[in-house]
Image 1 (tube, helix red, strand yellow):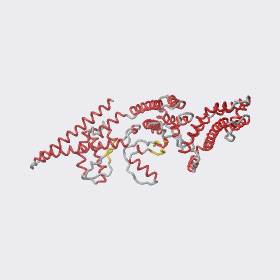
Image 2 (spheres, rainbow, N blue to C red):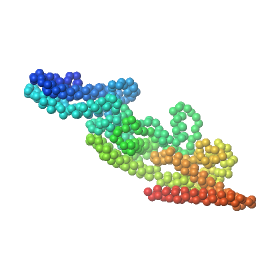
Image 3 (tube, rainbow, N blue to C red):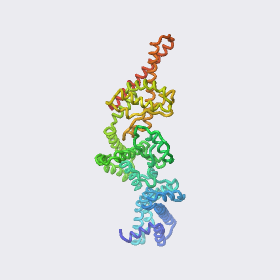
Image 4 (tube, helix red, strand yellow):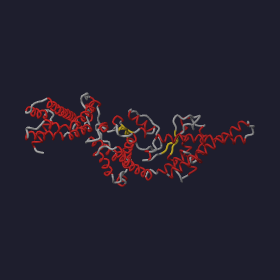
Length: 510
């Protein structure tokens, strides 16, 4: 482009002087100004007026965008946001990218104006009809851009919400940059909070056990009190990431959105392996490569979507491909490092009472001692009896029972089995799957099966007393006891054999 043309474009885009209007006046004074020519001139003036409205919006918006240095001064950004007036559009990278796309789209109109000016200088007899036909093709474009600008100003649309309104131009660049960094690297670089995933900047309560939650609350309240700490080691804290529903793009389904949240969270958890922070030798030798050397390949695959018109099917297929790759890696880590199979077997043995001989002896011994202790020391005594019973049965050959600890909240001395639970040491990265809510369900199963086993033991003890006793037993009592024994024995056998063992075998074969 020549220096002359560059100066013309700069003059044209300044938004201060309506160049096309001056050009039209020059044409008009050289023509007889008939009514139809007046109409043509009015149409041309309307087009250029729309153009200057768009340029004015761009200029006003870009003047609000803070500098790169200002991105580090988040406090000032928050203050500016709070004091933003109604006539200002929201700031952010998405709005900036939108303005850049608009500027690029208007380039054709600017060049066309300069071309018409050059033609007029060469041919002063240039007709108004020719001028109108040359710029008329931009009318629809201007109307679309103005309607979009009105929506932005009226509804305060910004961030990912713009993606729902625009699937073209460079507005996609920021969205896919956020998306790639989150999916591939687990990073959330979002100074203006425009992405639909937000960093909670705190521990995720869904991965916190009660004692961990109580400890965090005490730290936040700056209080210090004695907490009863569990002997079982808890898994590391997981950072909280959540979905900002206000910024959710219209084209994204809830299933796709949950997949994107899941992938970034898993990448963050894997990259924050506690072993890497505690052992330098481990970090050097076993530095994780989640994408197996293909991180840039998947990054470019997602990034390539920004250069084309949005296709929902292609977008979902790309996200699903990344999810499958990440899930396979997570599965291999759980099997190799987390010992998932052994973990499931221990859950079956203890939570589902697979080791019947241990809990049979434990219930018998504990019931004789529990009557002699106070309510405050019931749990301590039950834990001691549980460990001693396991040690006598398994000796030194099997010490997996050391990974478990009996506990309960608000235990009743009269019914100590009603709320009895068992804690288990869950290693990284199995805490992703076996989080507190899942373990709570396992504890409900454990409590139910334990009470069912105790009921069975009590009925058999009652039967032994009836058989060995010399007093006469009412026939109805005898029949009731027999019916209860039949019901409990069959229910216990059905749950342990037909349900738990059968389903566990199918799980291992899957």
